[in-house]
Length: 528
Image (tube, rainbow, N blue to C red; front, side):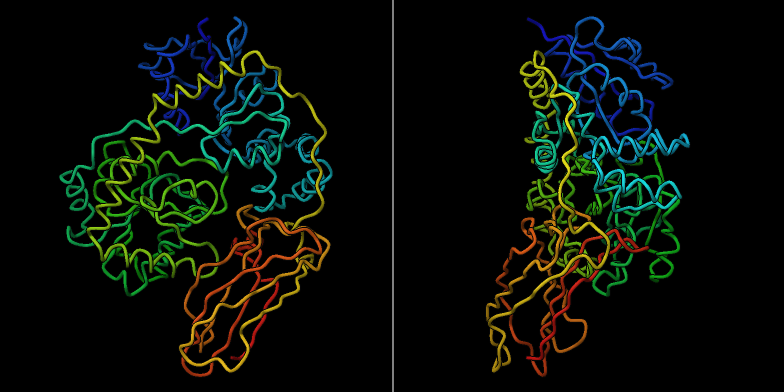
């Protein structure tokens, strides 16, 4: 029996990555199933899409017995899908792990605070209702936006849910064990390899010398893309020759020109803005390394990053969330937190000094997309899941999963006991030891693992003769730690020359401050 699908998504020319994704996926999906493409009310559809797929109104979804296949994102383009998917259950592809911004748009954006509060209470119980209150007075918390996904009732209304990373699948399963969820690869057509001639022409157009290293940041630019940290890294003496090209529309919250001027690198930062596809491809061909840092994250798999990898360009990403699905052979990871720009500069300097390694990573990046993100394989896995789930009933409404308070709560609630073994004197200069650090949760709230993002805890260890010390990777909590429990770390350290001090700090990941940074909760110092 042929699988009949009603495909519901934004479509070109809507300026949405999900619209582009749909056009890449649909030809392969149509080979495996009887697909009817549906257009969302009030959204334009390109003539070429009209001619090929003859879209019908989304309001008719499911009326002919077909299985709805919804493409869900965290922006206003998906408002009609938010409603239809609740009314007519199907299979929902969750492109963004959280939908809080869309929920706010549909309620607060219409001056309906009470609807916003009700939605958060339905999905998150008393925690959601309490979190909603400040927004009645226009007090927005980035922590709540990125920690309360506001999707539980929507997912419980579906026969099954598809996501594009193991990280997202694990998060959905942990928060909503009743929901059927499966990770499938995001399909990305393999383009032609980077064109050196096009890249050289773009460098000349921007007055960037052919011989200098060129870094690239691609996609819509917001504070969470960490572009300011990239600009700051350019001021490192090891990157004195490097230039940065920024391709994509920039949020009004960003002042890249001002950041570059303050860092003293304005002449080496080139902001192109939103560009035609040909210029995007030329910029990819021109760069040596793609930078795709991100924190916090809505859990989305970056199509722009995959397209850069597909063209044979290596990347540097944040050591967090869905980026951990990428092998380090194609994407180096930079730790979050204090010292982010320094760690980035060090990683870039090392990579740019090794053309052979850079070329090998580029080849591995293209091979990775070819083998792991084939649109035909993605379509096959989607159809397989739809066939398995199409006759099943949605889990249906359930009470919100209310949990004890966590380290996401207000400052002052996180209390820790900290013990250090193995750092006693005498400790000879240059001697290497393994120090054992034991943290005890001495408070009343559960500590969140670092990978949970806002509210997650991480340990910083610095052993130096000066106040700053060399940047070291933070050690994130590997699991949640309830009150009264302990977690330990074994850290290899070499004693520096001269009078030295071992400093430990327990950090809570932001965004809590006005700068969106982490917050130091506990500090321990010992002269060694």
